[in-house]
Image 1 (spheres, helix red, strand yellow):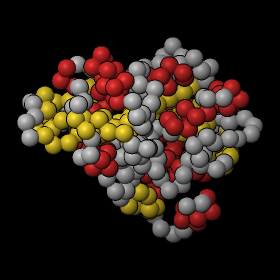
Image 2: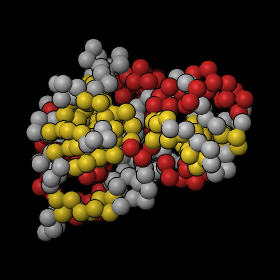
Image 3: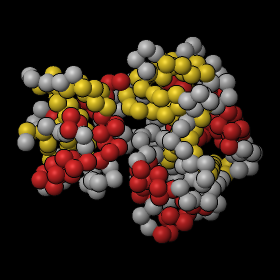
Length: 323
């Protein structure tokens, strides 16, 4: 979708806009969301960040998804000046930018050259969403002079309902929910969001969370990303988190059925040197988290927004070789 098409949809007589989920756990799903709730979300974000009319906002994300649409809505609702560039893996822009939203892949790519890194550092408010931020990327951003935030949210919450600081002395792994957002947990530990400004009724997520007494929280992983192997519950994201500082090649952890253990851990990687990968896993991971099978792939399965395509990864795991 281009900007002209979205603006036409926004300004028509319908009270709703069509959006699609990201498809990280399956096929993208269409949803109709209310424009008034999108406006409410826009005001909450701009208010939290202290953005004001006339500030410059960078649109460098696809308008096919909620993140891109919400950048336009924030500009329209709060009087921001929208600077539009091609939504690509390494967006480039000229001039001053007060506010930008990106996915981790875009931020990572921009950090690779000094010129692009300087542009990124000059952004006054940078929010990053749509995927996990690993320790290496977080470390590269902690010394940024301006505000850099990781977002927590989903299509159903019309972008984010909480932020955590990545830059400066207040950098934290704990998300701070916006005012008006009430959080709780299911018996399984999944986060439940009550955000009446942006969603009608409580929203039960698949995200397993740890909650702090002050209302902040951190995400441990998704309920559907748990591997049950020999009675041990293994969170896929936790395995990936331990491996990221040690593996420089792209990889994903997934699972497949196993006659003896129920399920087994499988590692997909773009590396062809499985001996090196296996040795790192044996050195870094607890015994019961060790991958039992490995598979080389030319490119990891990802969604259009750069998230791991978990269902596709599970399908590929059937071809992994046990070691």
